[in-house]
Length: 398
Ligand SMILES: [Zn+2]
Image (tube, rainbow, N blue to C red; front, side):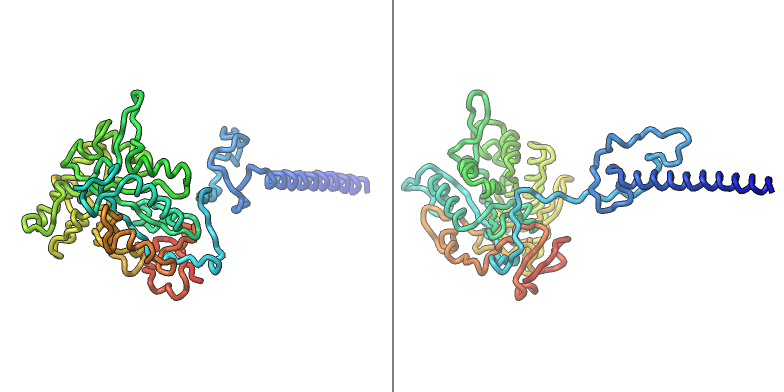
């Protein structure tokens, strides 16, 4: 009897210890799950990419759960949305159309004032250019880079229309440097200087554009203070791009240039020299001098080829005339011949930007929703989009 009593007491003691142990284990596990540094059971929790200081990375001897060997999956950090984006989704109210046209403007020369013998069609005064920026801004245009045009990565505010500025020939009126107190600065009397001043007042207009240069003219490109390398570096640091305009401003309709060898030399040699002036500089866009084209069978060499061991690839080939371009996600888009609109010169001509502005009505233009990751089009335009060119962007119709 006594022995049985003893066994019962022992059993109760063991049971109590067991229950207390279980309760302690539950408490420990519960506390661990509520530890803010523990994300392994909560995939929705944002995880800082840096190592949390409260997590010991020193393995404890004999410890089974060293943080170094725990293979818990860490959720990838999601891309942070750009704080400057102005995105809208109330499509019916502002009618975005990201299948619409994008004007690509072509500039050549800029001067202080016209003279009697000033060339008529490709020269703009600084005052006219400044007024043009205001006109374009007020009309709802915002500048994008050539790179973003190529990728249809449109980051202009919702309800506005993207536009690309292109500049041919590397003339000093487009951009040049002056020296002031031992420092190089952008000449305010240049297109870039005027754009910088305009951007101070209207930062949402954008400071973008691509300059197509001919490396054979050497130091005459953007002639002024500083070395050619410094000029390129400063231009790029401001957010501008550089493009290929051939070595020798080659006319491809001239029979002597109408060969695979001459085409590759004119493009590849320009690339070779650019890389020598600013190592790593790669052109990804070509502007055809005079808008000239060789025989159709040779077009492939405009796009890609090699010269002297230098390989090149032009993702866009820019023509001269004479209408707004379709976007790169359009079924009609042809990267080998992208149309440009010339800026108005001393004398207006049909098809220049002044002629086009009233004709670029909102119903035909690209109107952004503000989100570069989506392509928003009215339902009836769905068929104009080449879905294979969306490259991960989401097509939304309304
Ligand atoms: Zn040119």
